[in-house]
Length: 405
Image 1 (cartoon, rainbow, N blue to C red):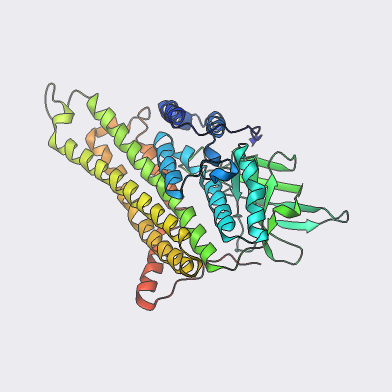
Image 2: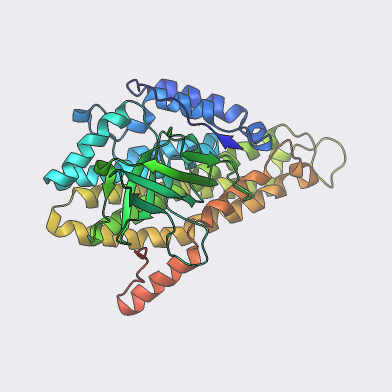
């Protein structure tokens, strides 16, 4: 089903109390929303009205001036309320972090690009992500071509376009007339842009990670950029994109703990014991809940600690920045092995607290494992773990840069 994009709204100064209230409302019907596949338009509209999308925009440009660590802590909280609600912001968060790196780098080109985009974000603009395609090879089919009238137009079809279903702007990878890879951003309200809710994964059902098609969509040349050859950009964005996913996993872990404790407290009997035997007093149930609590705490602390490292690396003087960002990315690869495994194990064990009754569809406890498994499959952890081993043995990392053609 085709979905229209939301109208742009002017963002108000970010209000933490209003954000907390929104999280409560979003959490209350998260299970029903997923089971009925009710998309997140209302929640995204409210978040943009709060100025969430401009939280990391520098204060001097009208934003909240939040660090990456602060933004990621909010993504964890969003994901605790609803795993999809945190996930849809991944492309937007990375887009803003790239702008901040550009702005800090100075120079007329990068700095002007950032200054061009900051007002759009402060007005409430939300940026979706459309990089991947369902092709038998890594070759891009999306094309940016200049017509006889001199206008640049984008034509192509993307999949795994997380957030684009809800977006005002879509950040796209394409090939230009010379066959070179370019990054560009298009207005999602143009009639040539169509997002479809055809994501068929068994988890993260409301992220809009399906198809976005572009049919002769005009592109402003000022919104087209050649990919940077700077290794620090690859290290930086690689860490940001992956930590956004791990923040979702950490949020799911916390929600799994919250849902499990609520489930246990309401029960009056334990399997295998006659009469009333409170499960919350059962040592085995206490053990499982303790495991869940430990997993949620460890996941959150590890993710936010690495976000602190990203902030510190970006703030390093240029001569040291590249190596600092490379070190952080290797540490993120290690976390990618540990955090999903930890939470997947815990979200499987949680069913031990209630026997068959814990399988109830109305409780929706199964969604935690499904959502974490789906998030963890975005960038297969085995590839990253093997890369860590390669680094330890040879001091090299695989070249995962996207091919130009």
